[in-house]
Length: 471
Image (cartoon, rainbow, N blue to C red; front, side, top):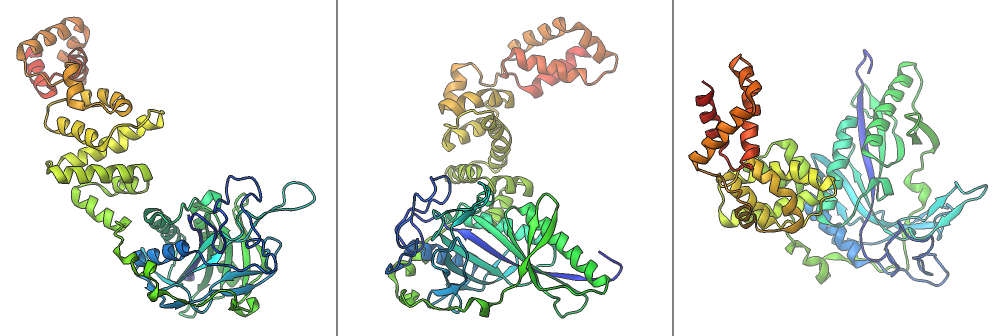
């Protein structure tokens, strides 16, 4: 950054919309995106006088399940508080949140310690782009919102981005949130300071970062901005800033509020909660969900490289499908080389075919059968690749289909000899090039053998016999 050494200290606050069926304190559908404005509202989420909020049991269970996954300490007692502030998209003029008694404390993700995780309600959504007036859509008002706060133990923009990605993956794995950042289902705020000593510098908050790239870019910019101010002999003001994606810079929004500005106090309409005495919550520990880090270890033991592992676990389709393949392979005790081969075909050929619009009807059982046929040498890789598009659409039994098409690998040396003679006669110029020293021509000739044999010839045997004839 400069010749003088500065240490950046970063803490993150992350808001996540939970994927419950109903809102946090009423029975309205939790569907803030893709609906007609104000389609899912009621007197409770609009804060009509005399209405009473009722906490969503599913949302609380989601938070506690997340706590189990990250090693957090679940509260035995909790309550909801009123966070006082006025804004047009908060119908009550306060937000139901948690202050003194969050549902979770502690825990860690990707080595980053967590301070707390609590539940609150989301605000409505204001729209300012329709003319010289603003509109408010209350579909989002009251949606269950998980707020996670990390300890200030992150020291780079890259580490912050890595944490946010792992958090998103963990939430998706648990199935408690969709966390699509482009839809605002996961929103990151970063608290950033720089210092040359062990004493932390003045903290600046950057709000509402809605992509991993924005998280990393905003933090990197803010570190440089603060260092530049200090190098010029100026102070860093404690404030809240926004991120301009176009200009790639932060900008001042307002001076930073503190907890006392919100005048928290326990909500008198919501009873206090004794978590440990609630039968539904006490049974959450019976759930077994394989977390991303556990999958990484298992797939590494199978023999998959790190980049391929990340490709699989970051994709909902690949993650679910490959897990089925692995379970089937373990049940039938396949040879160790089958699963790496299956992963290769899945992350390359299958992904490519699906990207072209090929429907995916191939069961994990039949996919594993196809890979096993290939691994045992019953069919060649050429046949496997040729059969795959049809298998994806039809889910036919691979061995039956290969037999019907006459695509089982041939051990008939007489038939191979006929094909080799035909290839040599039909490709005299390529044969001449090979005999003149162009080694690459041999691969073309082998390719012609495989083409004529419809992939049934043994490539190694074809090469061996072809070399004899050419010499």
